[in-house]
Amino acid sequence: MSPRGVAIEGLRERLFAAAERVLARDGAAALTSRAVTEEAECAKGVLHTHFAGLDEFVAELVLHRFAVAAAQSADLPGRAGSGSVTGNLADVSASVLALDPGLVGLAVTRPVAARRVREAWQAGAPGFPAIQESVSRYLHAEQELGRVAAPLDTDSVALALVGTLHHLLMTGSAEATPGSLAQIERLVQALIRTT
Image (cartoon, rainbow, N blue to C red; front, side, top):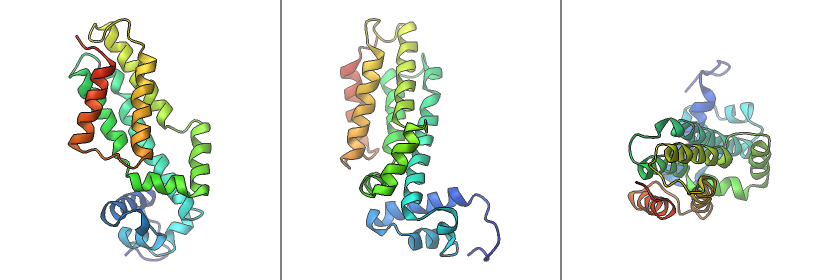
């Protein structure tokens, strides 16, 4: 346990990692301030010192996870011409589906957290729109290389893929399992024709 009054380096990331372990091990119902700080081996009040409460912490964790997924998707256009189109899109999909459905459920059912996430996205925080833009730019780059059919409406395909990911997260059926990733690959194959 960290001594009281001593700054903890990387505290935010440490608390986020601890929360993700609690969610994975015990489920969303077990995510409390105390459970997170005990898992992070921090003083019990440290979460409330750095966040206005559990709702703000949950919102910030969701925003952090979406920022990670958006950052991973940002390099997607640079991958045009390498690997397979469906494989590249499945990789990005897996990073989105890595969000714990329980966490997403918490963020949706806690009004303060839901409002904070919505406001942050409206203000430009990375989320579904950033991922959708990366997918669209990637598909356009693949079109230019001739690996995706020229008449393909890349914006619509990107919207369909990201909308499907959103659906999977919101219904709680999203987990980056081989079955769900195979389903995403089938969806991509149905939406595009690779050459």
